Image (tube, rainbow, N blue to C red; front, side, top):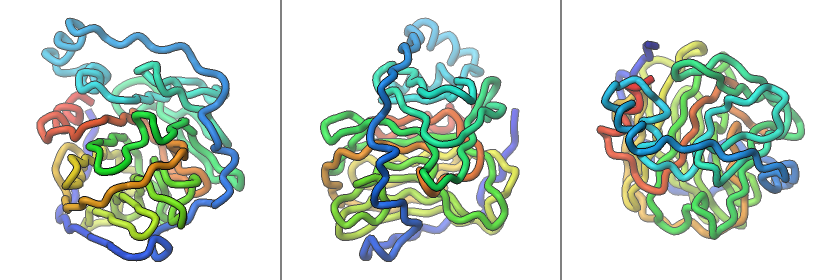
Length: 284
């Protein structure tokens, strides 16, 4: 069991303005993240229904809790530091490791997590997600993203834990996307080519350099909800439709990575209900 500091206060920030006015910018020419890599690792076997139900009844199997909610993609980072491919537990969307990263102790139970390093050529996992794939989430399609993260270096800039933005770049004038970013706050962004919407948690204390957090952002087609450590922390409405693009999903942030361990990244094509978010957190 690990303990985490739940924000003592929450506010909602709703920012509608030009995309250029917001956030950290990733490079426009992000050719290092052009696709998901050539080598597709073997698919991991999904737990069957009986195994999932038994594990949930026991209340301790984190993987089973996640698999029971049928993610579109699920990355556990159990690979060694020299691995070139990130395994998707669903066997459908393998990623490619790009730039420097290392394996570190896992954040949710045993196993490993991944720590990405700042690098001039970018660092992270690139997952091919063309406009017609389940990872695109164009229009107002419902979705959820879920991660475990651990702290951040003191005074580090805002880092992108995961995101899918046009041309691989935040604030690109030719499209939009979505992303989860962390600094002193946790922020989920839905960005169009002409404006940006974001919802943020605010805490009376800065995001600690050594604290472990379970972060979930959900969107049901009308409302974004942010959860930290199983607790609803912020919410706001948005009906903005996201444009199609062929940009990959980046985990670890590319040129502006989140500078702390990342673990158990799951993406869903539906909004996780509060009780399931709490069940995931409790199964750590």
